[in-house]
Image 1 (cartoon, rainbow, N blue to C red):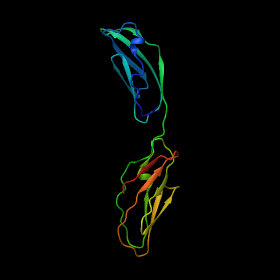
Image 2: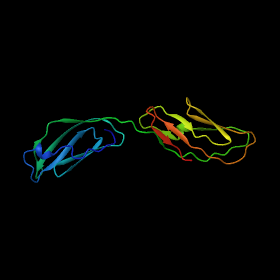
Image 3: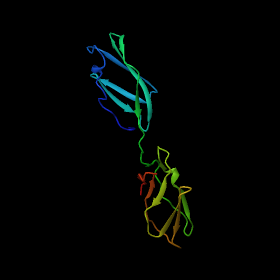
Image 4: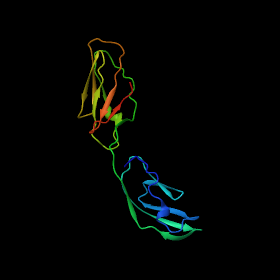
Length: 168
């Protein structure tokens, strides 16, 4: 599956007749993965967050002369649901007493799978925090005439309830 290496997927010596001093070449389309060939073993490393089908074959050569080719075969990399993540630190916020403040959490959280994110915030003293899910925005409503410092954390959940947390 996506984001997972497969080590020793198969042993090439069971597919090619002569395995002494052989050089193997892995041919693939599209080139979205790395295949490492060591001691007749194949390690398959897909690019991060990539999924799909790879069409491939292997050729064996001795002294730069190709003497054998495998049949064409497919590798299928199944998608997985990645958790959202904080892609940009939320800076400290400052504003004038008895006014409101707004920030856009969509500027700070990302989901590589494109899942719709829902947001929430940890309660904080002296400031009510409202989240507009349709816009991904947060409104801060401080107590009347309140001046001071407090902190909170924001969270983003994807459709599978995987969660990312902001800085404090």
